[in-house]
Length: 384
Ligand code: PMP
Ligand code: GLN
Image 1 (tube, protein in one colour):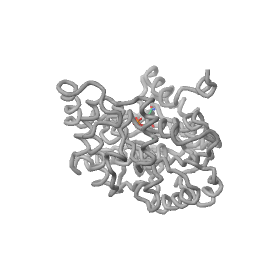
Image 2: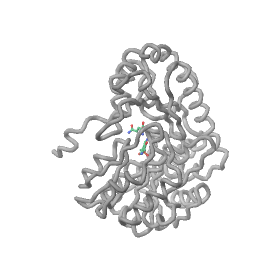
Image 3: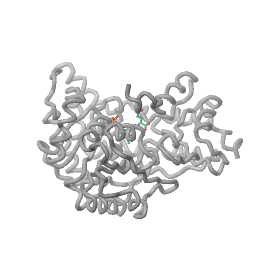
Image 4: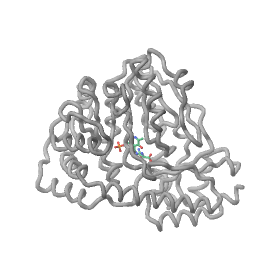
């Protein structure tokens, strides 16, 4: 069997969720919200199951959803897309990533990856024959600079994979960083594969800036989105891929033999949801921001050093001030002795891990967050 997968451990999200179930811990590990998601969007899916089309939809996605995606990005991100040649629907962002990496990489091509990296990226790059070149980001700002990009890029760099907003650091790349990266992409004729699944989950009035909107990048960016994050329905697995027609044509060839299509009823509901007015998106962000603030304040009051969270469902705690140097051991103790599951951020590094940061998901009801905080009452003080 292929040794890459044969020797791969089970993903940390699954491991921690299983441990949480076994120990009865409060699960602030794997990122999924308590909120059941907007009722009208769920109703649209149910109606589509009962009265709509339940056979194979078109391979590129339902036209109504592709039009809705193009319209949505025009309204929310000033990105103009031709829905027929530049938008494709996939079974989640994960399929979009897998298909794009298969379609864009030839064995031996170099791929620039930023650490911390979402755990699916590296195995998919390696399986496609890509040669990873890592750029290491560190707390508290988790930004890259020109010297790091110069060291990582070469004329052999075919793809750079950027996650923005970034899971797990909960940071948003500023425009100047995107422009810097764009310069390297143009100089090296590199495609930017941009995982923008957290585009709507941004706080404090921030507005998402897509790599597609950066000068010089319109024809060399693949933008990936996910309805799971936009509607707090992470199990839905409806993804969007947007790219210039000359790229999308090739990505579609990979998609047609990975999943071919995505359930039509969910596509119909997402098409409806993307048309919701601004108040839904603002309300979703405001509710999450409240949870972020409640949990961050509670952690700080209990002696934890909380790193800023500008977006995503996550916030991080820096263990260094507690003298803690092993995030994995800390998370094991947290789940087994204190009944709270979190994610060690070292799991997002392939080499030279940061070992002093732990990620919590705050997208939970107040009583769940308060319950976790009371279980964490003495943890920091004991360690310090
Ligand atoms: N990329 C990132 C950065 C993610 O955080 C996630 C899931 N949280 C995904 C991709 C997967 O998205 P989907 O569930 O749509 O496959
Ligand atoms: N993206 C989610 C997270 O970061 C987990 C997704 C998964 O379990 N694969 O928690």
